[in-house]
Length: 279
Ligand code: A2P
Image (cartoon, rainbow, N blue to C red; front, side, top):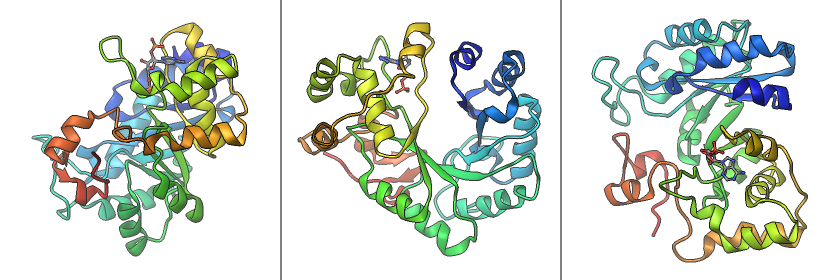
């Protein structure tokens, strides 16, 4: 599908050590014949490599077999134990600040064009900024109309940090349809603009100034997700407000119930993460 996407005109590829598909992504790039400089390639440092950043980077570079990557993200702020996989508690070494300082060193290597973070809140970005000199080039977080990340949006805009939305469609699965694709306002706009609901959701993100990484293994949807519409400012604002309706503000990708009932994300509390408590 990566090869199909490149042939259709996709140019931003988002992979990660943790997805186990770096090798296939690298192969698709080479097989596509698309010049490397036309492609923006992102991969991510996994938790078990927080204490050994250089090693993690080399493992990804080897799997990708690419000359360079455009962006290297810290996938999550939590480090994990290399042997047990257990999450290292907030504040214990390697902290995300220590990991970031090791990532900064990669910038002297021409094979790493920029570094950034993922799943970072305003709280964690502020803690990072207090101790490090390099501002993350990007922050990749879950976002869609049910999770607009408004304060993070304002913070990153002010600091010049590019925001990328993952799960822009709410990560639908046949067994678990995405509520955001069924959102009545999004459906009404889809009818009005004579376009699929997915296109409305992606257009809304792009209109906010975000980048996004929709994925599809379905050739038709892969193509469809490249088309955007320009929402009127009234329509854009209406969709931006739906999360304010009771019960609509939610994480769709990690399991809202797990997060909110247990209040823990990979061993860190919502407070450690700087994530809001939701109804
Ligand atoms: P499929 O591969 O069958 O197209 P997300 O990007 O939010 O994580 O969601 C990814 C999932 O969304 C994929 O499993 C994909 O399934 C599905 N998907 C991709 N594009 C669309 C679309 N335009 N409308 C509905 N579902 C989509």
